[in-house]
Length: 225
Image 1 (cartoon, rainbow, N blue to C red):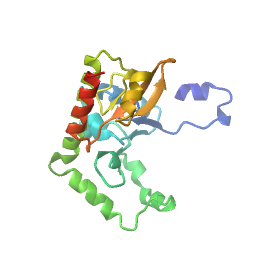
Image 2: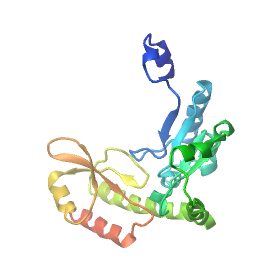
Image 3: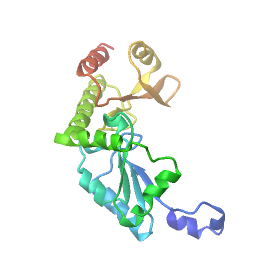
């Protein structure tokens, strides 16, 4: 993409590439392997492009089945990432981590200019202090993964197919209109993609706050479809 931009004779009329932005995990519930992230970061450095990782669901990605990374691996293979707070137990806010020293200069001025500096910002930090005590951030993220895997297994055992093979807290079963109508009377989920006239993919999301008894009830209802 970087080379394609400059090889285009009209490149000066287009937005200049300035950064590579990825999400971990992705909106489709997929995760990068450590090798994939290392290779991507290598290319970014070769092209002199900062790599930014959207970590809104970072905990759920790191604790997903098949993940071979920890938070240190994330930090060593990007220039900036953020630790999602609101999706993983915090009342509000995210923690931006700038690992590239060249990008750290003047960041607090940018926060001020863009209206991002809180008058009592320490309150935001207290949340993350607590979340990273005794592995709490990772333990509650693992809970969400465990709940999602129970839902995934229930659908698979019943013969349902999935749009994506996600091992994170997001699951994407393909379900008929009739069954969706039954489930929607009792459960909330997001319509993700229409497959054909009779079936659609929906997204079920679990979180740190998902109750196991609620998941067990959903599993029972899936078994009885």
